[in-house]
Length: 323
Image (cartoon, rainbow, N blue to C red; front, side, top):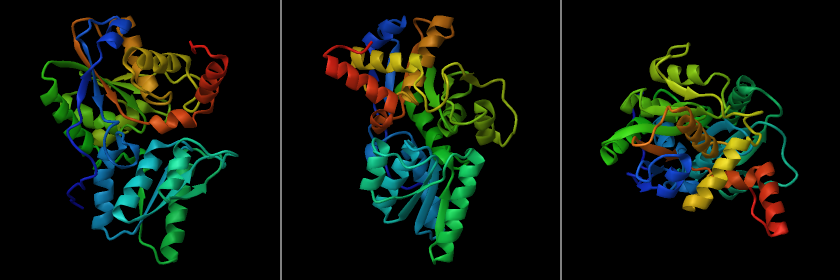
């Protein structure tokens, strides 16, 4: 089905210089820019808005009245789907992995604010979570609803067009662009950027959201099932697990905050900056090369990440700076 994307954001998003962060990473002051995709769209903004313009367009074109999607408890995609549904007048059901927490916080509070219904799927893997979403959609249809299932992370071969457009936008803003560093979750953001800019310019930093980051991006690009050796993907920043605090990511969150006043979060954007820092240390990114860090949003997730909140709260109580 051919669709025209909906208008859910204010494009184009700005790029901002980050000279003090660049210097701290070992680059020249003018080398680093930040693409602020955290600033636009309903629900607090973020990269998922560009994808939802396409997936929600498909849902509306199909006559759907209910969006069903999946994610982890602190899913930014789930939160933004809830917000998009509220804007479009669509019911939203979020099928989330795990069990309901004793004290909801972060994205879960915003899910409730936007009126989304939450179904907890328990401790299941990605296929199990998707199967749970399909069951919820089937039950909704039996009750007379017209559901549309938005895939995990909103990443489809159609929705990657949102970040293909973003890549073209970025090329016009930064003509001498050499590297684009971006968090790699479900793969759609990186796939779209690669389609627009080529695989040599895009550095994806695997965050642990999918088992095989290379295969996920390759599938979204051309439907292949295997890895593409041309893709630049770092897999060294996941740490213990997707939902655990990785020390390099936490250090990156603190570095961005204290050199630029820029708020990242530990799951995606912190890992993206940590991956860029590692690439500079390895010589993959060198001084004098124009580099862009894509800020994909996710601020509420900082306040939903128990380990990060505990560290900041401890530092605040002690009246000292967290390292």
